[in-house]
Every structure is written in structure tokens, then in C-alpha cells.
Length: 290
Image (tube, rainbow, N blue to C red; front, side, top):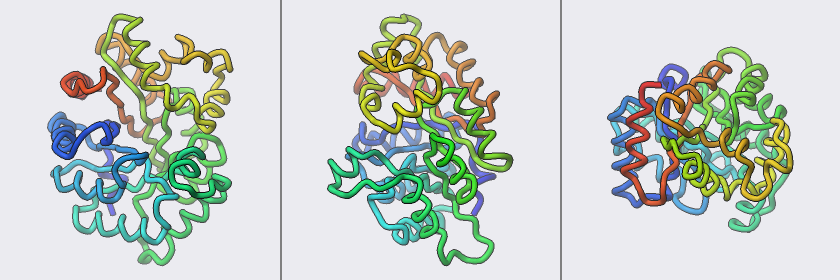
């Protein structure tokens, strides 16, 4: 499998749950037409990850398709492995299995399952995914890692990490922990908007769902943000770090800071007014030359 060679410099992260089937196919074509190397999608309350990956691969020609992430509580490791192998066999090694432990409300509240200790659970899951693979095969697996222990696990048992809701400071720490030869594919929210009030309003709306999740809050505190920064929808300092805004060149400079910190791949997430896919596509087109 050719993951390390096929995953280029820049990708797009965007929730397919915001789109119907025709709309998500249009999105994939926009991403591919503008020269991005990968499209990343989450698994939450909407589309099932493996079925969606098959659809996305069928609607693209050369684009890498990555789950960011497939919820490890949604399927047991053998099913994940078989799905990963089949998708790469059918679609020319273009699928990346990004795995994550998700969040307690999603696992216990939505799925009705017990949320176990993240590190031990992920370690056992990765062992299951890699079990009985053909000799010499390196599985195209990356892990949603934020804290040091999960990053260490990503380095030892996968091709790398796909951190979400992080800053270049985190990217530098993650690079040091992962070491050389590992994928570090970092998500960064962006909007091309020069009005500070409008840009921050968009950022706060996009981030609201994450502000109540323990895993992200703990990581933001590790990064140096204060409880005050995380209160009342987030301070301006916090929102500006989480969602880059300004003119195109200002946003490009912000994205480049992740590369300067050691990212091997940056997946930008367009942030826009709800349903305004034209604005989303314009952001994708404008930032394709980062």
C-alpha cells in the first residue's frame, strides 16, 4: 500500500453530513479539481464511515480519501481491517483509515455503549486491525491523537496522527513525539473574511459543538489556553487560533505555520454560513496554492 507516497501536502477536511449524496459528490470533485491530494471526513451522527468511503472513492479518480475519524466503537477491529483492505484493493490504494476513540457523549449517549479508557482501548483496537496482515504489509492507518500518550501510541502502532482542533504549537509537540517518517496530518479551520466580528461569529458557531467535549478541552488547556479562554463561546484569542480568518494571504500564512512546525500534511476545513456551498468552494479554490 502506498499511503506515505500518495498523501501529498494539502487536503480538505469537511463533514459530509452537511451534504446529501449529490452535494458530497460535487464537493469531492471540487477538491480534486483544485489539486488537493486528499479529502477527509468524520463519522458522527450521520453517514457510516466505510459505506461513505466507498461512495467517495467511486466519485473521484486520484484523490486520497481519509476517515478523520472512523469511530472505533462503530465496528470491531476485524470489520475495520477488512473494510480497509477491500477499499484499497478496489480503488488503487487510495483509502486511509483514520481511527479515533470519539467522545463519551457520542459513545454512551448516541450508541449506548460503554466508553473505556482511551489509550488501552485504542491500543487493543490497533492490535486487532493489524492482526494477521500479510507479511511486509503496512496498514494505511493513522490515529486521532491529541495528548502525548496517544501520540506515542500513534508513532508505535500506526503510520502517524491526524490531530484536530489544534494550533501550530501542538503540531511542533506532536512532530517531536512522532519522530521522523511519520504522517502528521493536521486539521485547521479557515474562513476568508476580513470583518473580525463576522469571522469570529462563524468560528464560534463552528466550534460550539466541540467546546463541551472533555477530550478537546483538556488538550486546549495543555496547549496553554485558560478556562477563561474557553468560557462563553471562547475568547477572541482562542477563536482566532482555532479558525484562521482574514484575507487569503493572511490565512495562507497561518496554514504555513503548521508546515513550519513539522506537519507533513495540512487539511483545511472551510468555515462558512450554513448551506453556502459556493462560499465553501471559493475558500477551497483560493487556498489551493498554500
